[in-house]
Image 1 (cartoon, helix red, strand yellow):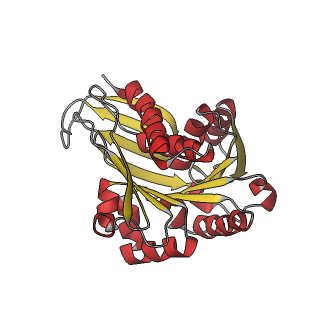
Image 2 (image 1 turned 30 degrees about the vertical axis):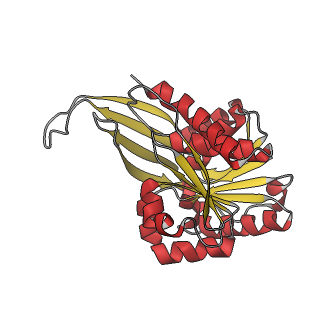
Length: 282
């Protein structure tokens, strides 16, 4: 079973039809949908046929209840703490498809100690960096990682955001990774550059470092060497890339849990991400 720990929030996606007219009106289309990196990975992994559990916290409100039910309907086993206010992320998508996030994570960061029973039968634990930077969520997540590690589970971490890495501090972020010793770290080119992956060909203390590069090839480093380079799928114009990185992670993890090679698992990551991107293409 795959388990993901982190955010389950409401995304408010605002697609701008032009540059923002400061102090006036700007025409836009607005969509509300389930969000949160860990939740997105959970749903995408369930669509790949994995048994998936999600652990997180939402508000004691109708939005949180609806989001939890959506996870359950997608085939995910939700283990949820309730209290406070469900988080919201406003996603601004400009006319070129570039995204800017305005997060208010609400109750998601308030996850307290995770019951050992919620981690039973977990073979792989996936954690976005969002789950490692704010307390008490960070402490709860690290405790969970230690517990599943002792049980022999694999662990993956998604670097998530340059802003998150800089908020923690690059050096401190690397220290945390060395302490956690994840089997896999996933990042995009900007996150990889921030962490110095291009110079080191992988992160110290990490089994495999995956660097996604949008429409270019995704690469994997292990033991200081390049071990795979897999071209991305060719797609049409994409209006919104939200969730594609999470879908890639789900596909990659799905492949590795089936004992596929790193190269084959990256191909599966591209395939699952491509499904999300195709839904957003115009």
